Image 1 (tube, helix red, strand yellow):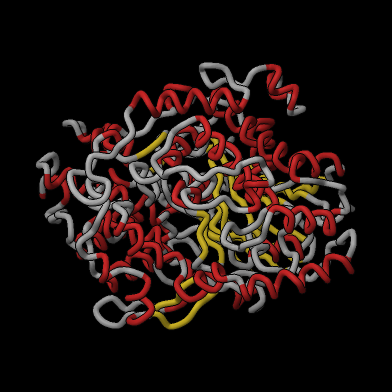
Image 2 (cartoon, one colour):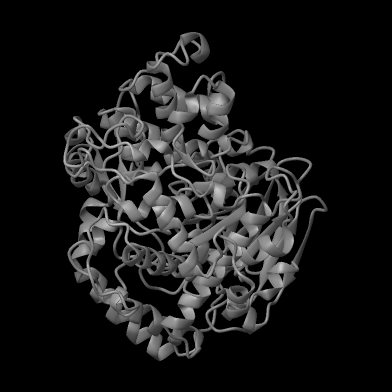
Length: 619
């Protein structure tokens, strides 16, 4: 058995109603680590370019990492991946909660789901034993109802990951939900799960996995627990969560408003984290072994009736269902968040799709005749909530938006494509490229389509450079709007660090240094690893994902930003400030060069050899 791992990968073929178990060798684990690394490997090896993302030949991969389940803050996460129904390329998302750790305790590092069941099913996994069970009684229910039913059947300690009605209906941005309030939100992976008639995976585990140096690991865990508790950033995440960002971003013109037409929202004070804390917050939840506990749990009475079990809106949701739609009604935003959790919808893509429709409605491109009588004006909270449900169930105009903004705009036509805010088919997250210039380059290049997590946020590098980046040779702060080669170097190294965390799998909000991560990896795995090896692992996964996307027709021509971001705001701190298309294109080419890709963004044979993945040209 490999230290830090359960040592087994489960395959579940729903077409043949069969399961099998593989036990990879240690060199496989060390090359690909887990999480995103596993996903990149198996997609390249096993999912060909002509596969329909919503067909039985796509594969859905749930992957832990070596740090998953180690009892310390940040280790309650797992990754999910497949060929994305939004982009047609590699899709992966990370999610917190307790399910990933429970899967490792049940004896598995990953699950590869293949084929399609003839009727709804769920997987039941307990201490290495696996059953494919009938889920027809669960189909059509909300996530809470399904979790309650499975815990009643298998015991209260059961952990559940599942889709909701949106995944059942194959809404292209449906998500996969752990513990009903932690979402693997991006890339439409819930639609893939729904296409396989797989409603849930219920897990219970009591097994231990080996650590190479238990004494060293325990000593380090105790030290890090204290450091995290006393860390100012961690304390801020506990008291304010990500929702605290809304006010600061609006002040700097970085809060997406009215479908990215503006960067400041006049109603921001009504929806910020401070207001949430004062009005609807009931408590803070968290993930396995985490002392930060950053997730809000809210309750709202009539007419919305929001329960704390569905958590509460974090920053991305406050912006996507709030300022992006010009809605300043915090209880309504909380209701939208709860509906997305109950139905299994990505709140980012949901909000961007509704804001797109609102702009089209206000410009006269669509009318009440198209929307079924709904007045889709900016600021209409009732219309937003109606559309969430219609998208999840593919009712009326919701059926068009359920395809994502890229496909919706193509169907609507009439110039609506200009208002569809996406990269490669995936909707833009709630961070403004006119404020954070290199983040925009990260959006354009990302293998998943626009993503804010495996990216950098330029505002973090304007005043000082942290010790982790100094360990990579980055020393000089740069303005947020800078797009020099020096800034692209920060993007390359900073995003690679995020990919490391996505493969280990470790939370980006827990303030451990690169030295801490390396030391933790050594004590857990026993490998004499270092920052260089981990960085090369991340570069390997990014390059593999690039090769996979190129095979699926996604190359240089798809590495673009919506043209809206080349138009400056007409007021506020960023008045007159925007990157030019030429600057963005030049920066993308600089990124290619730093990554060892040619002028068309294709990894060179020399780069593949340097990363030890020459096999990708034959896979």
